[in-house]
Image 1 (cartoon, rainbow over the protein chains, first blue to last red):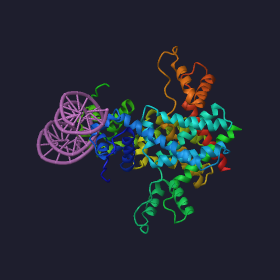
Image 2: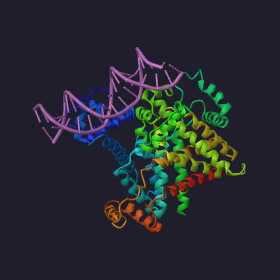
Image 3: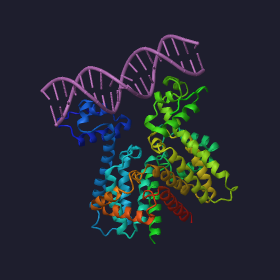
Length: 231
Length: 231
DNA sequence: ACCTGAACACCGTTCAAGT
DNA sequence: ACCTGAACACCGTTCAAGT
């Protein structure tokens, strides 16, 4: 929004930082060499001195987000104890932190999936998670499976086409009620589920689906299952 | 590849079918109004008579994939029995079928996550899954959570930046062994895990990570957990 | 060394025109 | 009705040129 004064010289970090900002604010589609350059107060071609091209920029975006998770995980761990933690609590915290970062950058999971090169930073995450699991008594085989289970879940939850924002209109008109009636005709179970969840949550609740609660439920489902497999 | 003779008149279905083909063959980036039109033997502007624009095309792509899952699920169910199946087997089959379709169209999950409008076809899926769950004794509350758990998992697994294709070079040179040694320095647990999995799988296995097996493991983890919550 | 302007081959989309 | 050609505002990227 505000014109960038930008007296600092350009750098890979500054370019990537501005690109993340742009993607957060206007979506990944707005991240254009030309628009990004304009946001930095520079011409498009200047970016090529710091990144080989658009592909490298996108890979850099992924790396930046992955790195952000590292920082957030370290910050969360710093507040905790000195290591008496068990694997379960450690991984739970890590997944919640990763989710927070993904929610800040909702374009990130889709971008990760579409890149062919796998970002170097994720190996560092895998290593940390493996250390926790092996320290908790996991075999490498079971740890491998845990890695997939938890990783796919963190990525997938951001992708879900569910829980649209509650209608922003006047609450008195209650267009949702009319929608529900129409929906009940053709999608009876879905309508009943939404009605039931709304009723249980009370009128005060905005929307009927708290995706953070759903995320934690699924996360615990996986952690429970892994703990049981561990024996 | 082959020039399209295309004497049939254009239609929304034909356009979307060609778009899916193009995305499968060359990636979502290749799906361009102009290139899609060329594949259909027509000019770019002709597409606008069947779809309002690029956004509608992308939404249509998602709908097409979602519809494909429907067809595949029905086909898989037709081979089975007449309904004596329990919820677990039914959902397991459904998730495996959905995964098959996603693997055929690896661009689909990322596209779904990036679209703001939620495709109408997914409601039909939710309805079918809910019917199965409620028929199996689930409350709407628990069924809601199952919906999120299973849905995010199917989407997330395709997104995972793991299990790169095995190196295509000569197997005798074994560059993987050298990579492993270098990796062991900085990522000891990860290197040990890969080495352990390769050893267990035997030399004959291509790559060290069978993502289908990993998927089914995670799927069963979730189904087990849901069955336990059901009581 | 870092940045730029002009240029090229591509986009999505509009619009007036063809049949 | 369905399709088209020319045009407009945008892309990523190259290259020779500036400082």
